[in-house]
Image (tube, rainbow, N blue to C red; front, side, top):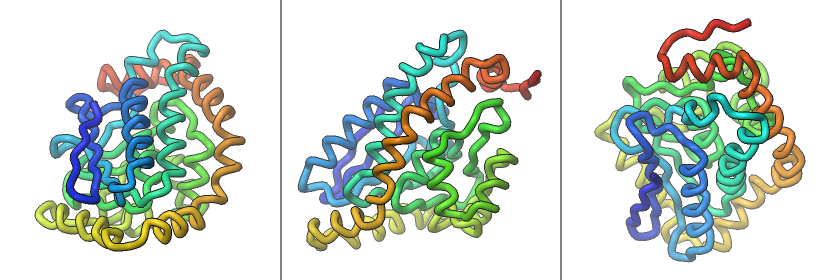
Length: 254
């Protein structure tokens, strides 16, 4: 479900779960395992996360795993996601998201938790549709999104739930580059190669200086984020939102 490809100092982690590259608890467990292994591998100097195929980076959570589940069951299903996203956010080496297709929901959370985001300029869309499917947005990614785009833009992005094309995402600061498909591979490689000959003590030290302030709030908010998201998912409107994704229709909220 998470394919690993090595290219010298670069490790590529490819989300390859299904046609939409949705993520369930098993996919997150696999991602976390790959990240931990890469963290401890001195030969890995940069990690690239991307999606298999050309249509989806990741369309977010796999909705079917939440339908008809209890609060306790949803909390349990969310734990691997919390493990993997926490590991990604505090990962000590540079991580690049190569957004090669639609990037939505928790897929977009993965992307903003990386150091650089390179998105193909074309049909792909980037967004946070939580407001459209009746669930909340956790505090930790909300904090990171505000850091990237500011409170006014974050507020607009989250309340509207509107997917963005690459140029808009670039203008708002959600991504670092919007590139043509034929240029994408070279641009990703260029980002990775800046670390190839650097001393890892410098790379890790600089990365730590940029993210270390997140450590305490991440630990404090994780339990609350899990429980509040689970409550939203098991609510009547949350279940309607999950079913609407599966049935490919607009939800009807109460």
